[in-house]
Length: 106
Image (tube, rainbow, N blue to C red; front, side):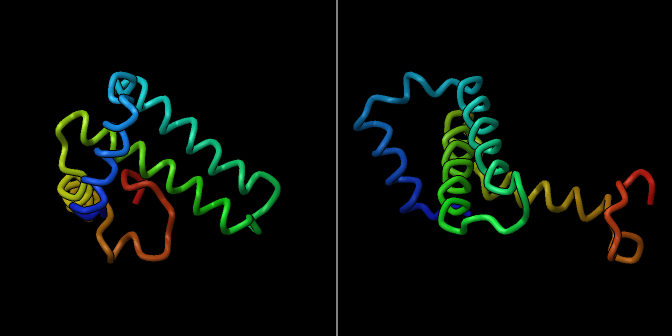
């Protein structure tokens, strides 16, 4: 979950470079997908990925997610907390524990 200080720093980084003009929701969604693919590429040939590369790619994904939430006026912490409530309802502990079965098949 991003701290207020981190969000301020991220906003300033984008402002200094005048990159906000490129941060449409569409472009940010594309960037999230591209960076997620680069994260996945770390594991392309097995689960023993280079940790520093994984951290860098994960940071890119999170950065674009924070930027998209910012652009859309969404509180990222609140969105995650609300989604967790919904997901808890779909996957009750007594039926979902230890299984990867989708909620509608539990």
